[in-house]
Length: 58
Image (cartoon, rainbow, N blue to C red; front, side, top):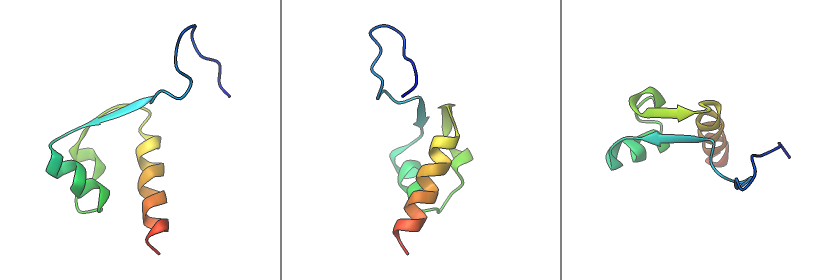
């Protein structure tokens, strides 16, 4: 487990995505590219989520 700052939740998100509700749904269904959203933090988390979602649909 990575070290955290005092008082910081070790399970807290280290990335966020902002967009319209429609954009967020379209991203989850691979209809538009992830670059359509405003991403902050570790972009790899979104790439991993997308890859996991694709694998779970097969």
